[in-house]
Length: 263
Image 1 (cartoon, rainbow, N blue to C red):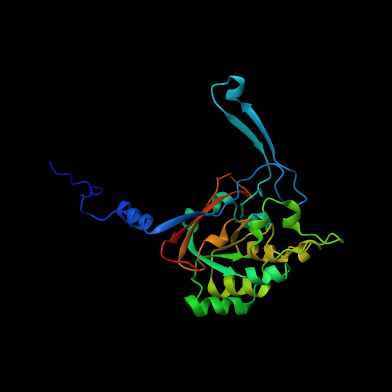
Image 2 (image 1 turned 90 degrees about the vertical axis):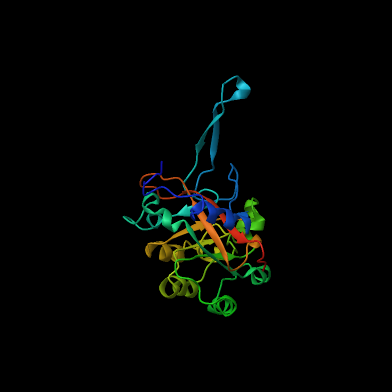
């Protein structure tokens, strides 16, 4: 008896399963997420994580269960628009279609090694586009600075001078305006604690982060392993829990990188 259901497919028919097999056979998975824990680097105004074993097999319980007490902006995390903009999109209103995107990597690692206050310029973007073509609309652009290698050393991440001013890289206004207003990217990410450079955040200036979120876009902060992905040609998957009205949450982020592509 034949199945006339519109959902029936034969073994020879193409499906997403075959596309998945083809994709994963040609790709390497790269985790872009730090494992979070109490005592890790974080925004100084936030309390530390508290973790408790509610049920513990070592105490004779039948299973293990932790209770985690932490702020939403903890470890590798997502900032939705409402994080800085009242009434804007919350985590549960960001559609899953925005969670799988082409990955663009802007690399300023060498400049940051010489000057920790370095930020990307339009020349960096022009050089990237000369090698790979126009930054794709709807992409995720990550800023590679090498700062993630300092994790989880809080002092190294903050990199403060004797006056308490943080010297850490960040984005620049000119590059963000190009990416969002001209290229039409969906989201950004970076290895540092903040969108803005440390010299700005030390003065209480979070204008670049406000700019990003005010454009109804989202970002991932404290990314890991950006030195292990190509600057073009990979896909990023960024996921997080779905708290109703949520203003931020730890995220799990990874890249699918073509096996034959290396920087």
